[in-house]
Length: 135
Image 1 (tube, rainbow, N blue to C red):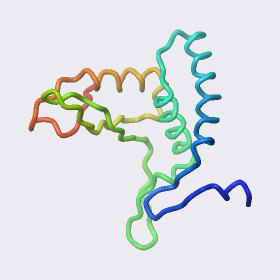
Image 2 (image 1 turned 90 degrees about the horizontal axis):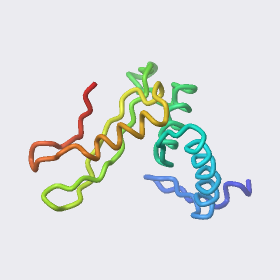
Image 3 (image 1 turned 60 degrees about the vertical axis):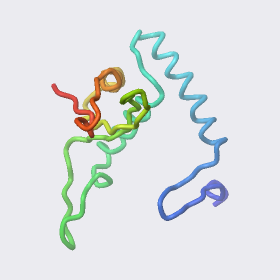
Image 4 (image 1 turned 45 degrees about the horizontal axis):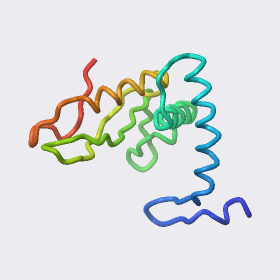
């Protein structure tokens, strides 16, 4: 198929040409700007992508399953997504993981607020390896 002739597949990742990402980003950024103007909610392209991934997983739970044994799978009811959040630790920018729980049941502004809260959390060297959200 010609559609897939530009996809490069390595054993670790799937890469798409930059022009595809730009076209998707440009159209979706317009939609995000319209939603921001209409609702007044703070959202970003990243949070919109996270919500899309969570929605797709909730509609097709088998892609989020873990194989158990030779013919069984564990299928989760909730979708948790881990992302990296850049934080300053002793003056150095460090990427730290953030686990966002139940992304499928949150709206885009809730996801955005959770990421922003994690960015503001104080990190002490040697004490925090993962950013944890409570509540």
